[in-house]
Image (tube, rainbow, N blue to C red; front, side, top):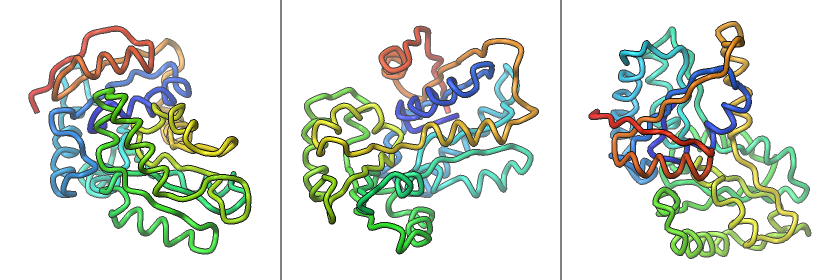
Length: 260
């Protein structure tokens, strides 16, 4: 699995809980992050390079690929499926349908990167849900990068700005009662976000749905007889990924550097 940085660890956490016997290789493309404000063609180029690496690594090729990034999913999943027709590839997208299922007011806010919100994939998803709810979509420039570098003061300032821009949160008619975390980085600041919205507002992310979908896709390919291992790899500073994995997953180990 891969992400532009450490955000996909939120999906990895759900995957390891759902599939504890599987081995996971996590690639953080931190040398080229963030994806959310990059050109789609650049993101596709990086996704292809990482997929090639994972399929040709000396420890053996992967049996499935999870794109743990909303922006990369939108930019690259269709091309990667064409490139590798025999490889199960699972992507992520903002959890709009799960949000509709839990919202009582029908007013739903979506925090995501500009790249995700501007993608054809997201616009198609949004158009398919017209009439089911009212969505307020907020591009959150700089937030994923601030989370990546654990810049607490910047995270708080940007979160306050973007929550305020989306409108009134609450449980009355016309108020937003559900917040979709449309970037895999954002679940790691869920506690901070909850302090900025009305009590009882629900936060929805895509970690658990992606984990369940991966289990369904793997089926007979899944390991069942041993506990899985985890390898972390980074195209940038390994310390960033190692610190995040320790903080958010309780994982301790070394991160392999990737010159790709």
